Every structure is written in C-alpha cells, then in structure tokens.
Length: 141
Image (tube, rainbow, N blue to C red; front, side, top):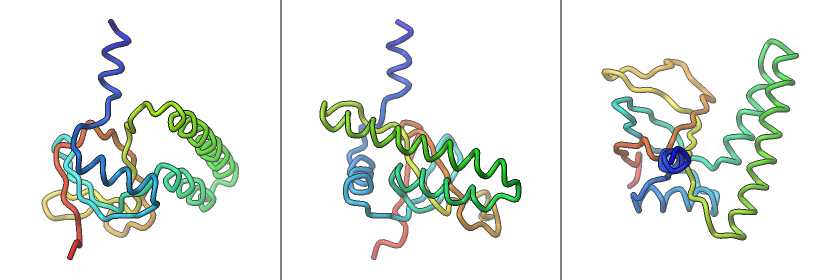
C-alpha cells in the first residue's frame, strides 16, 4: 500500500497544456517563458528540458569560488545527466513513466511585485509537475 501512495505522489499532471509544453521542451528542444503558481508561491522563468537543466547546473557550478566544491558538484550533476539520459532511453522503449519534474532557467520568485533574487542571472529551478496550481505563458504575441 505504501508503494501505491509513493507512486501517486510521483504522478505527473493531467493538464494537457502543461504536458504539451513539456513534450515540446523535452523532444523538440524549445524553450518557453512561463510563470507558475505552486502552493501559493509564484515562480517565473524559462521552461527547459531536464538535460538542459543538468548541463546548466554543471556549467554554473564551475563558477563557484570553492574549487573543490565546484568539481564535486560538476561531477555529480554530470553523472545525474548521464543517468537521466539512460532512464529516458529506457522509458522511450517501454513507453512508460510520465515526467514528474519541471525545470526553469533564469528563475525568479515573485512576492508582492518584488522579484527575488533581485539581480539574478542563471538561477536554476526544479519542481514537481504535480504541484503546479496554475501557470501563464509569458510574451506570446
């Protein structure tokens, strides 16, 4: 029974639009500016693939002042990217396992009209798709 509850917690979303955007991002490599509402928190950024997320965090970690920490984080995220690629390949062969996470680059939190962090660049964000309460697409004209 506990396994079933864990599977339910891991489930993706049934929102056809979010699923369409995620499919375009993961399969076609597009990027799309979104604002998400998640449990009362508003986060805005550019929707990216999981692979782009892992690559971005790996590259960003190289800019850390602590060289040892930089190397450790870069190696760990590189390994995660490789594991994700293997998992994705297996899932495509079996046509199973929906996506459970959404990834943003240049993410900011919006609170009472104030963006946090104020002078951001390269803020990487990852959240559960199932936690999304609502969203808007930015700059579609």
